[in-house]
Image (tube, rainbow, N blue to C red):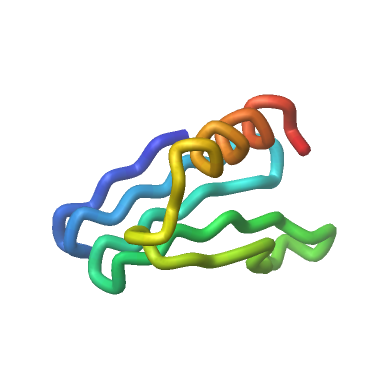
Length: 68
């Protein structure tokens, strides 16, 4: 699922297989989260968008794609 919210300063959420990637446009953060058995989302990691490398984006994509 892909969600875009211009009300939240250009934020995006992409989720699949109890994982999601969140781009927080307001705070310029990128987060990878996992859903627990009790349906709570926890951060696997969070970093500032300015610090994200292309290799990290490819790894995020592959992890989401493969359900890791």
